[in-house]
Image (cartoon, rainbow, N blue to C red; front, side):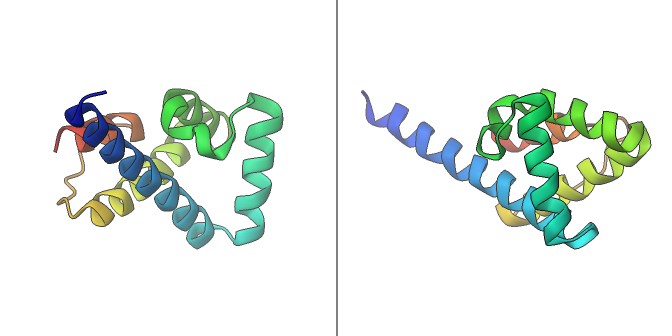
Length: 111
């Protein structure tokens, strides 16, 4: 494996970790630690998405948020997670109408 590939994998792992931390912190801040843990259990049992797998199944995660919180509630949570993610990455956050967490995450990979 080349060094460029290794560096790319390391950066993606750090980005994934920042996303997971942003999700954890946002769910805890908005709801509670107990809610966050119950939400992750629900996510795993009903959608077969483990917390650690969310970066690779982000589209499915966003769909679950929409089903649980409705489209408007989901967008509020997604935006809050994205803001926290961008802050962790040292990127200025600019809200873009219609953008989902998936869109913001993809953009963060390009920066």
